[in-house]
Figure: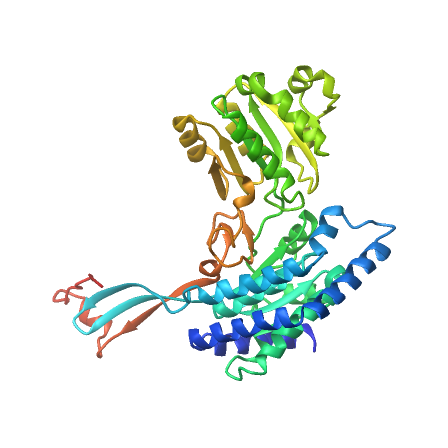
Length: 435
């Protein structure tokens, strides 16, 4: 089936899916979760073949270590996928909610009601767990989804989609075209031209992928190009707390887009505990690229000098840039200038300083005394996420169910015409808010 036919089929499926009752969608998702657990062996076998193929195929142009890490699945990750789908099933249906009701006049009531976006095109690299996250969120919110995984995850993607297909056989009310896939770069470019059939594109991958998508479509694009996140240790930072957050935000999962790449340290905090903190990171295998002030403070560590490029780089691995700052204001300016508006955190016991940071930093997530790694749909209680958006329009941060619906206005009348409300003897509107 060609890209145009896939998109048309998805559009038809989306229209039918929008009317499927919430409980039927929830039962379907529980069936998928059960299927993941039952098919764990087949999924891991397919994934092992992908990982081995990636090592061989990309030997001349190596797959980035962070991408290879995201590609790998194990039993714990499959169990996590199933848990995530069950969590989505338990969430309220985001579609069909009445946001407001207004009595325009007697017998004329206007409602603002949520509804699905329609058809999603999701392009992702490496991480096969995107299939289950996106599939669950799309179907729960009443959207059809077309998935395009990278060639490095082709077998894993197919194995996961087989689980969805198997569950569909038990639910004839859910149209088969609600979840489909496409292969090959040419197929993606063809889909990016189909703005009459596709409503939103979600790229989940590196900078080059996102920029390619943005440059080759008129369809709205939701996502982020990079995750250049910061931890700022304020002058009133507690040493033990700062150490724990700095380590967690980089080493808990270095390949994640919400892992912190740059550490900013107030000079007063640096004088108290920066040297032992950097020693801890070096001992844990983190490469430090530091400003001249930091290097002068810790000459025994032999830190590499940071370049201007380092302040804007997403390493995706155990590398961290470190910079001393003279003030909170300097830290905020650095974050807003060099960050990617993804996730930023301040560590401080000074509540006024924390509030200033929270108010003045421009990012989808701004935290106080917490690791940047909390920027995640599952941890936010969304069940899962289709991606993290750094846009200021429609949805921002981890995008869950609420980010996959829009709204429409339903007007229920009793024969009213506009002419009645015009002219010298015009009937007045009531515009009364209703429960």
